[in-house]
Length: 209
Image (cartoon, rainbow, N blue to C red; front, side, top):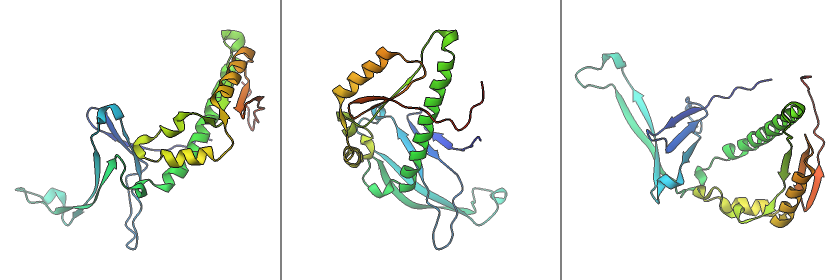
C-alpha cells in the first residue's frame, strides 16, 4: 500500500528560509478555527543572530475580483497575529500534533532504511559489496544538548532521552567496530547498553524478488 502525502512548500528567493504546510485550506467553524500548523526551516549560518518573524493574515472579500477597476479593491486584509519564530520566544507555538506526528514519520523512515539495506545485501553476490545496518541505542554524548537549538527545546528532549537507560559513547564505539569487523552481510545490529545484538527482522510481506 502506498500512502500519498502532499506538502506545500514556499521558500525565499535565496532558498535560505523555507516554509512547509500540510494543507492550504483552514476552516473557520465559528466557535473555533482549524490550527494553522507548519514547519519553518532556517539555515543557521544565514541567520547570523538575526530574527525571523511570522504573521498570519486573512483576506476578506466583499466583491468580485474582476470588478475591481481604477485601483478600487473589494477586499480587506486583516493581520490576525504576529510572532517571533526564530529564536523561539513562545513555546506554545510548537504544535503538539506536529511533534507527535513526527514519531511515525521517523519510524517509517527507519524501516525504509533497514529494508533498503536488506535489499542491497541480496545483491552482494553480484556487486561484491556487503550491506548491514547498525542501530545504536541512547548514548550519552553532548549531542543531546545541542540539536534543535533554534527551537530552544533541547533541554526537554535531553531530559526525556536521558531518563531511559543509556550507554557511554566508548562502549557504543567499541561495538560499532565489532560490527564492522564481523562484516555479516544483511545483518541488523543493535548497539545498546554496551552490547552488540543481532536482530531478526520480521517479514510481513516479501515480493519474492
